Length: 450
Image (spheres, rainbow, N blue to C red):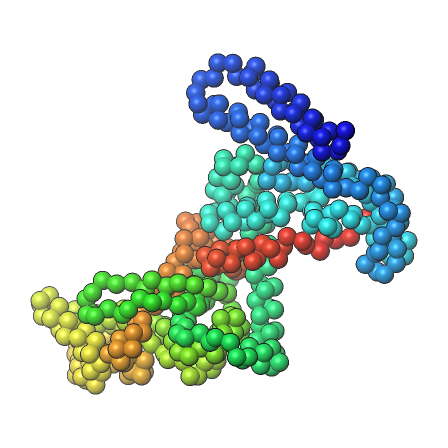
């Protein structure tokens, strides 16, 4: 009988055994749910059996006497050694050949090396799925949900560990990108004659997250960026309800000084070929650090202040200057129209005339400074005519999804490194980069066996 035939026979006997046990122990089930749970448990056991048998089939029945060691010497076969895998199908035990190098004394398992097995650790598939869950929900909740969905129990500590591991992989990839982006030969290769991005958008923002440390720095800025494209048209009127239907969104984030974040801005941009884009458009809320980074790394880019942030400076002045609500609303609408039509001199002049107002003076002076400083980024009629987006909703949504929904849950206070790694894992998940990140970890270079 062939090995496959023998395995099929053993599997059939095991199916009959489990089926018999199932029917005997649940002769009169109370509900369909009980039946479903029982069958799921049986299927999990069958999966463990098949995975263990499959691994046994892949192991050479007659191991070679020697194999090449990483040090260059020849490792000698010792014996078959037991291993334990923690997989999506549960705990699986297996045996494989074990070699030891007489020179460096390192132990090797050819089967482990070939398949990327991680004895004593979570498998790559289980790590990926637990990290995906941990990037979505607080670790205790993600542990409960994962157990309910898969029947595999993974502690909240393991959820945190796998999520951080994915964040670390994102960090490694970003370091590789930064090195590439500072390599002149690599940048030259990027300029070879291929299709250049026609119109690419970038956006930057920051959101406060609560981290452990001294009270002075308990809240830190998580800086975030996004690259995206869109075919959406800008609004036709200032009061029109609209949103940017962004596509191909790629988020990145970190907690660091602005200058360091600039390296990440440039590196991620090079991956998008942003430096070669025919039209590169950046959106932001007017923060000085944003425009400094953009001017430094992409001096030819078009800079646009988010329309909604700009309009937020109007109403505080109107409400302070006019006690009558109708007058305040009318003045606010007039200023919105001036801004929409690009009449910045008239807009700034209106604020300057209120600079000495007893109640509105402070807000008016602040607004005048803001619009004067950013007037070259507020040519909204021109932007609309060219079909440019004028709202930074994509990066604001990214900040909400990365930070507000995951890092700022009730009572969350983060260790700084864990906060950064979890944010990076979640950003990769939201950007559709999860398959790439998990593939990088599928065949880890594990510590040498002893």
